[in-house]
Structure formats: C-alpha cells, structure tokens
Length: 177
Image (cartoon, rainbow, N blue to C red; front, side, top):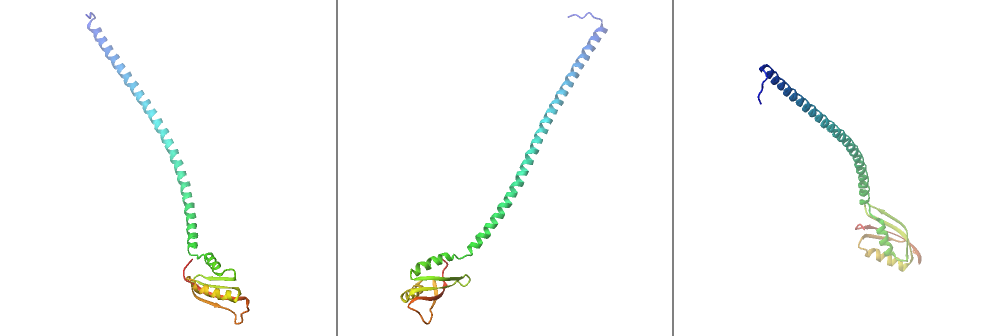
C-alpha cells in the first residue's frame, strides 16, 4: 500500500499507533495486575478459612485431650485402688479352705464351737464337743495324721463324760491352703 500522506501525518499516525499500543499494553498489564490481585485475595480468603477451620479442629482436639487426660487420671486412680485391694487380698490366708478341710476331717461326731487363727504364727485353736469317747480317739488320730498340721495338741478335761465330751485343740498350719 502506498502511503500518500505527508510525513507529518504519517508521524502522527505512528505515534498514535505507539500510544494505542502502549495504552493497550498498559490496560493489559493493569487487567493482569487486577486479576493477579483478585487471585491473591481469593487464595488469602481460602487460607484464612482453612486457618480458622484448623484452629477450630485444634481447639476441639485440645478439649478432647483434656477430657482424655481426666479419664486417664480417673483410670489411674481406679487402678491404684484395685492394686491396693489386690495387695490386701494377696496377703490374706483364706480360712474358708481350712474350715472346709476340717469339716471333711471331723465327720458327724464332732461339733466345732470356736475357731481362731493367728496369721503371723499360723497357729490354729479350735474347741468343740465330741459325741463319744470313740469319736474323741478318732479325732485325735485324724488330727495327728494330717500333713498340713504340725504340733497338734489335743486337751480334754480330766474328767471326761461318756457323751458330749468338750475338747480344745491347737496346732500350727504348716502349708497355706
């Protein structure tokens, strides 16, 4: 194309093109900056939202941890109580086993009136009555033949009636039952 315009107008047209290009580039840069700024604002809003959510989750977890620590403390106290109870019962000698064994030993002729047990010395003292002299002899033999009883001492009154004879026996428990 042939440009027939005088050089001044051509120069003005070139400058107008340059100004239009600069204006368009400036507008493009401003639009890009606005889009970039809006993108940063959206990202910032999203980060703030995530930060608030995370703060709420952290607060919920802290309250759960406090509750969990309270529960742990309660469980520790209960376990301590159970340990004390267990320690108490481990130190006990169950006299019910001894009484069951003695009831098997005595039979129907013997009636037990008193029973005492001294744990440190393992001393057992019993008293009761026997229906006959034969039952008294059987009781004496049975107590002497027991493996768990040592130092058996059976005392009877100097005058022993033929029926309902009172006795007192003491022995040391050799093994725990």
